[in-house]
Length: 251
Image (cartoon, rainbow, N blue to C red; front, side, top):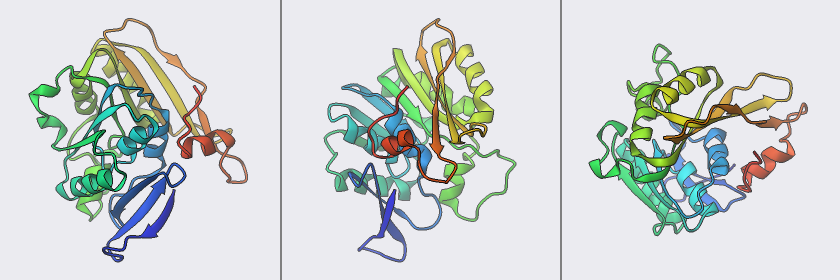
């Protein structure tokens, strides 16, 4: 990811680049900012020509990254915060992706009824800090990282609600919440569950997992090889380099 100041307000905003400068993302310099988790999820998802839903889209790193990788897919990007949603709309236009990405300003609790069982793939990089943690003084960062009172059950439940039968749900979560996620998915008749671990450095515990499940499937759960992000010297591994360039992630 590369950063430069935005010309319209250098004090408040920056323009950051992902996928080898192919996707530009304007965002606030302070408060909520997308990170490598979003870039990895955008590189992991396979979309082809389907209809996708991005819950808690932020400034669009996941949605716009996927849209750039798959020019035939259609994505609805849901973001609750009005200021962040405004930046998301600007980023859709900035990347000339208005024919693929539509922004829906909404909380996940109040999605349109027309969204039920509509999407081939629903994805999210949801809040991961515990609600008992220390809250930031920045309201945008609180919404992104503390969850505004929503639980993983709420997030996964709404994703499953919006997913088509035989469609997929993919979430980037903390590794220590994998058992909780798998339990929720099983309880909602989701199968073909795959866990894709993300290791910061070889030989260390995974700190993130991408969990994917298929609606109305009875197939069991498998753990994929995953990806190691950094070599011992701190440099990116070859697989991580490809992922950060938007060239996909080998399963």
